[in-house]
Length: 453
Image 1 (tube, rainbow, N blue to C red):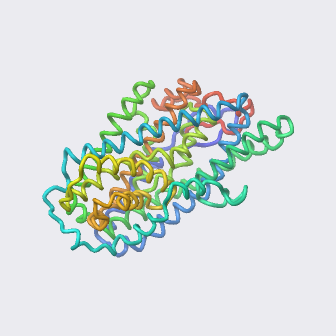
Image 2: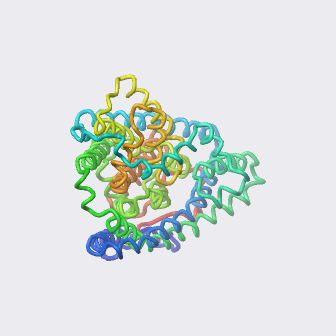
Image 3: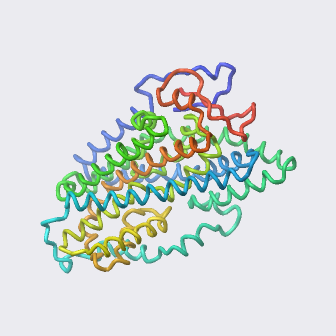
């Protein structure tokens, strides 16, 4: 947990008993929820509203957190060209590693051959089970996605759930606020003052995290059952192992090159990762990720731009899943794919993964959109993995979340906007005050100075 410093002694670190930490409470809730879902599946399914309610609570606060962080970060910049430079570097990073994730999933599918030997006749599959996802996939177009970024009104993103719309309005408003100079200082002061109560609200809502994780995992196990995993264990195991290797080897190498350890970063974010695991949604930990990245030394402006954008464009776990699952279906149905077909699949997946940004159940929907454009792979084959998709969704969310944390620190380092002392203290969990990297938007009386508790 994190608390706002409000006294002269706020730099001191107060440790809670281990059994009251968010990490332990969420872990205990996941175990308890799993047991209830396994032994009393009907009760587990009835607990679904607990997980849904918590995710809705978190989504309620996401728009204000993103808006305030970005506007106060950009408005205080001395050179507005920095905004474009940070955004360009972030998008270059996202494009490279998202494409790499697609390639990794394809390579693993060829090496492991998870669908080989199943000999499924596509005509025997019940396509009605996936019809809703196919229908939603037809609504995803690149042009429609780009137009959807533009909100109906200036205020509508703050009452909606489209992260990219919030990002667009916040960037434009922050730039405008910076350009008006002294006339905008009262507005900037008000927004900076709002940061403290909004993040305090985040902390209040996070107290319900164990309840949300408990309900979500109880529902998942209760409805789908652990036995479901056994039927497609080879596919699920290959996906989890591939995602783990992607994080440890590829993201680990990037982290090492930038001067920090991926293992220490995972330990630093362990409570948020458990929350993502329990709720099967990386959005449930978005506000906490933004705050922890600032505590780890990344400047407010970089965090504000990279994290929300990454939630839409840096979906490493989803991309691994898409190519791995597509080739699994091809192998299971004995569908031969030429090199040209596979390259087409890769290119379509690159586009469709961006078009589904912010869509609920995006992994399965983007897979449907990809297969619809590459007719050689039968869309009906998605029925084979529908039952275990929920279990793979958890791994997708964990990989996406970790990838965005790494991206934020890497881009901050490229921008020389990373306080290495703060990063070392955070990742090594050393006692003492924790301050974010120097940010032009944060004055001497910045109310968001944070300490660990």
